Amino acid sequence: MDKPKYTISTAARLLGISIPTLRLYEREGLIIPYKKDSNHRLYSDADLERIRCIRTAISEDKMSIEGIKRILSLVPCWAVIQCPIEDRDTCAAYIGHNAPCWKLTHKSEFCQGKECRECIVYREYTDCNSIKGGIKTLLQSISLPDGTTGISEEIGARS
Image (tube, rainbow, N blue to C red; front, top):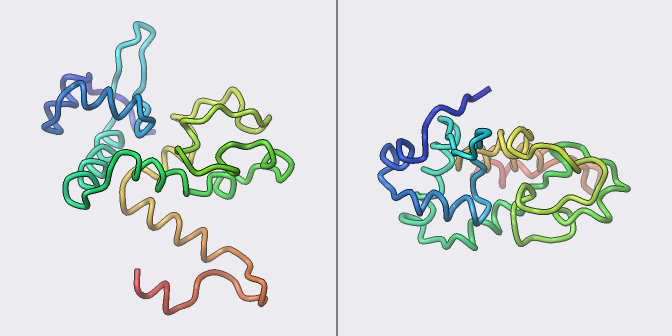
């Protein structure tokens, strides 16, 4: 497991951003820092990589925080964690597309009470490449109406 080890000030310094910016990313649901019993935040190397991806999306790709949240909301968490179909009807992540699943209040039995920071959806979709790669993998495993599976070779080759 990627161990939280950097204080908020150290993480901000390593990333070249301000502490209020880190707090903004947390408030907006883009990151979930580890919180000690004292409520002090700690960040892991994976957290720093996630923040670098966010910073690249904002500064180079000219995406807004809202746009990043919407992209993260499209990660099909229900497929990743294989939540039961009956739980999906009341799942805000399955129904909506406004925020990543870890930012939502979970009413389903499957996710309720679980620590989102430890969830595979949050852990595995850490940086820009893992988000794209994870979605490609999921698409390749989907059964299509014509009996084939996944995305076509042409689409897969372009990405």
